[in-house]
View (cartoon, rainbow, N blue to C red):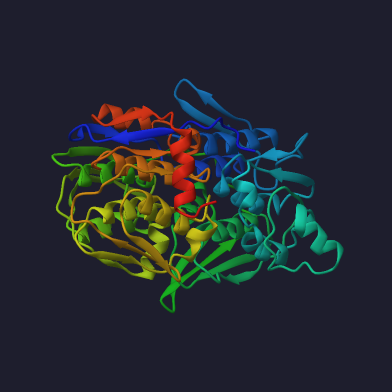
Length: 476
């Protein structure tokens, strides 16, 4: 069951988007600042923390484990318990909709010798956890109990490490996990981070080999908090070696603006005629830059100014203006640097001239929804030809005019909701989504910031139309 009551909404063209603003703090860095603060000695003070449901759930989980995370007049602070210093909670740990939170915390809990139950909302409970559990099992983490079909597989002896385990899960860690060397079978910053966080508690060196680089916030922040690790190139990829059982020290962390949240406003500025928007203090980490690189290849008018660095992370202000766009081929190796931005990139591609092909998107099938299928259904509902070919998403751009007029089923996915509301700001007819309640998990200010820029978002009271669109596009 979702934690939120469904709230349909529609967006329509009302004129250009104009103004300067900032977006909330980066979600990935916010999670990691809280977690590493909890594993440090002393108090970690955080400014710019993303106060969205996903991050707040991580704060509540850490507090229930004995590392109090609380808001203060000057930001947030975490009272650290040190590596392996967390205590058993009184009840289950509820992660809501946060895949990042639960997967990273599985790594942390691998180094604590108590039993704990992990649960989430309806969307998170459908997402597979086996990819993360596989290396953590090698390090000694025990899955005591899991849900539904997986329990039956265990009972009959058919379960293995490749099973698609889902929440709820009951886990038991070790005082000292086993250090391992693990090669990522598919690019995943969450799997990498979970293994490194488990490795903090292990004697000896834990090594990750990633054939394709993924977002590196965990490595950067581990070093910032005092962990001993090395990062070196290996056969076109990266080798990360972490020496376990360090004493981490509480730090001051400034969280930059989230580039994945900024992507929706930048996309709106690029596709809405006459727009001119500046977004300040945006994270410019190269492992998160793929969306902006692709927009520039499409001809988007983007300028990056006031470049600087905060706590080891590059940041800049982004100036985005309405642009004439052309179709591009987005190569599969770029996917890790923009995996969350493909739905809104597909929206931008709908306004471009020509056929845009985005390759290597198997990861989108196991996000908050099957984003490949859901994105195609949303585009078709609004007059844009699109299809999926294997793991590629293909969008036939209209050359500037998108009909709109459809209502999109979001499947409890915040990025689907925001992507298609962004489309509505530039379409000939309003675009509706069946629910915006889950946007609070990552970007609660989305609606107010769109309004600040001059965009029109209104409540939608058309349940009959929403259902007819779902049926028309084969979603039921």
